[in-house]
Image (cartoon, rainbow, N blue to C red; front, side, top):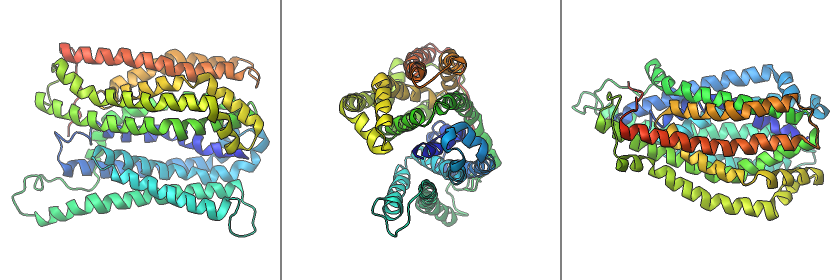
Length: 445
């Protein structure tokens, strides 16, 4: 039943287009503190959180209703029927995920990293406590823990963390500003008298939708291809499917943590610098020119993040390949066969994740400045490389003996292709800014 727990990952991957749509627009909209007041940025944040919460609730209900179809696609046939309850419970983690992502992303753009820290800390603490009390080897009581208990714990952790983070944000940021606005009512404070409230509005949603639909489209294409490939992995049986799930656990749990942290930080600072430059040259100036010095100033956070990512990721990749991958996989799965397959997977494409770490940081230049260009480079990578290989994996007669030959070319090769792709697009991005050939979007109120 270990393979059943991967349903949580696949459900949230299916919902990732929602979480990478409007929330990723936060860097270019909410992060623009040079052109927007704090009141306006908070109003946009509240609108984002409300919209994401409603979207997450709808998506969770859809997944619960389609539990059988979800199990058919993402759970091996051996344990499919026994996994239906897990799918139904895990479906509502999508709601928690949308709220958590919206709050964490928006507050980072507001320069409030303490909020996502609270979310992660609460989730960690609740998870440890419930795991120890209910499903650990020395849990309380004489009952036998089940995989469905783990699903309930996962859901409780996600919901408690998401709403704790939301409550902390409203108490520490919205509440003080709201009181200040009340005190200044009728006074001379121009910002407070700009007829801008803190409540969510349709107008704010429209502002977020302009770049948000671009990032939504990028994520939808990328994740649709990924989930299509996952169905070929699941069809190969529990050993291979479990190994892939454990591989993802290692990838997301160890490798991606520093990558994601550096990405968020780079997006935050690039968004601020881009907004400041746009304010200086004139927001309505569609074809401004930038000096080399200014371009370097804008992209400097991405370059620093890239250097830090290399410093962290190279030693991790070497250590896991030489010593840690098999032992960690055996600890997680409890199966020697799964551990051997996982270790082979990791040794084959571990070096590709070094390229991934670099390309992720370089992509922040586009995401925080030109979301449309971010979409273009992603489409180039997914349509020109991933899609042809995904078709091959569908038509090829794959079994456990030959499947990884093709899957490694898809997943590992796409990371290398994306790295080359993002370098080319970043160079063109800089050239158009310096020569004045750029035509910038206007995401104004």
